[in-house]
Length: 317
Ligand SMILES: Cc1cc2nc3c(=O)[nH]c(=O)nc-3n(C[C@H](O)[C@H](O)[C@H](O)COP(=O)(O)O)c2cc1C
Image (cartoon, rainbow, N blue to C red):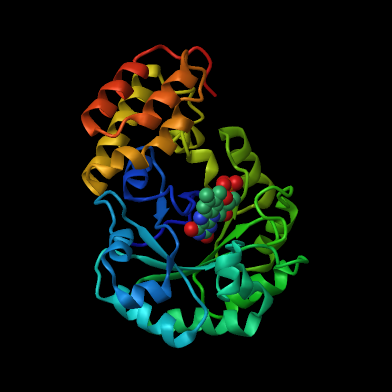
């Protein structure tokens, strides 16, 4: 499956704990061009435990499909790639060079690679050398403490990556510092491989502005898609907000996919999504959130969801 960079690519960002198979399959129905697995540690892949292998699974709608790995030790990355090589239907292996979480950084993975560029180079080259997938990509931030984005991005390109996603903050900027779109533009101007812009892109107007301003080949949306999986359709077409009826059917479909994928426990896992879905101006939202925090039975949960989201939404952004 070749990626088409002749028009902007709309990508769902990997969000650990959110962008699992059920959410990705719903987002695909609204036109996301590319979906990425949650971050999977290369160490965990080597052990092939059931939970890890479930995270690799994809929905039939996900073509192309990218699996994101974390790690830095070349021999472990190589073994992880060999595990992924046995699985069909994966088009891209993406290396996480952005995760700021101390547990990941202390393990010398994620954004810690931005602090050790020779190690980062070795990790990318290892993927490129051993992967049997069509593409290798890398997701970076602008630097660890200070911005050295051009140096990082050029290294990614020189190591043979086919495209790059850039979250426009440093590691120190975590998830709140202002996103530096000028830096993303500079990366786009400096590289020949496609560049995907990421960070705080959460409305159709913002997506258009970022594409125009940075000249990027695509945009990646993370938090903006949580509670609004239809945002990709709006970004691509500039359409109005979806009808209350459509929202209700999307939420129920997402819920059913969760139960299919996780079994009964999917009802409990779905609570965090219901908290976001119910934010759009619904009457009785806080009572609803209290209620669903207590329900464990999947059928009861479905009935409560169906009833609550049957109401017409007055304000929905
Ligand atoms: C809860 C959460 C989980 C995340 N998990 C990952 C991950 O597994 N891999 C990754 O590369 N980035 C991860 N990120 C970063 C996002 O992919 C993205 O770069 C960042 O949130 C900025 O984009 P946004 O403003 O559109 O959310 C995560 C972010 C959040 C908030």
